Length: 320
Image (cartoon, rainbow, N blue to C red; front, side, top):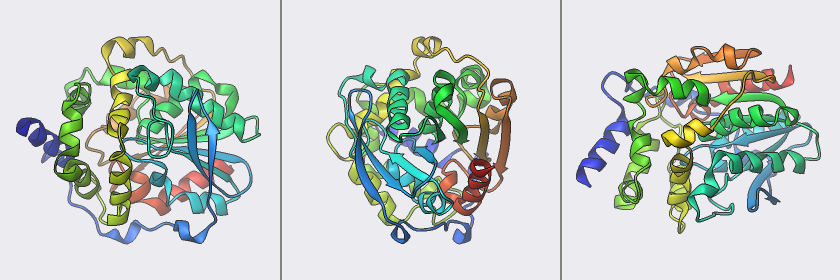
């Protein structure tokens, strides 16, 4: 266990070649949730209830969070998008926080995750919605745009690989080294023990040490994430995203056709220690209507590290 925790800490910090000193917190701003009215609703997904935070009126934008967060991942985007004239829908993804939490590992396969998003789009009352995803939310967004192009208006991806490109790159040492923790997450029980030990110290360090900019996550943010992950079965549910989808057998079953027909924006923090910038190579082949914006001094948690820049780029794209 000590070995696993040591390795996990190394992954959180990144190697000496990957980790960069954190910048000052002058860019970690964005609007605050206290400035707007939030609505908390329940929407029926693919056989489960999803907790959804909503704000604003207008064309729908659905924001999909990643591991190990919840709807709060987008707290600095919700007010800006609502003020820009969008109806913002932000679910806790299945298994997270206040959404339904199936116990079966297979319930977290991409087919079910995509079906949850389809249910959200239909619940908006609009024929299509803008889909925005980060990390696992981005993987789901890529897959959703492939499987349900008729439900997608525009697609925005933040630091999340297209699975077709990831499946190729993960065989290369430059990405294999970065992705080792994903293999660790496929193991039974040990990841739960490592991540939850010492009051979730590894998760706390993930939010405190990994961002390239100080102030990306407040103590209040971190405590809210830990509280959600401390619920019975919540950490296993979050890890099941990896276990249900990223085995070799399951990766082979995930057949993404090309191209993605929707107008697509990719925003990428170049200091991401887990997902290399090379994952952008060849994206134009799978998303021909592609715009890429790279942020040099942000890492994986890009919407929290550079919220003002992300908001400006995203709103310009969605309003175009």
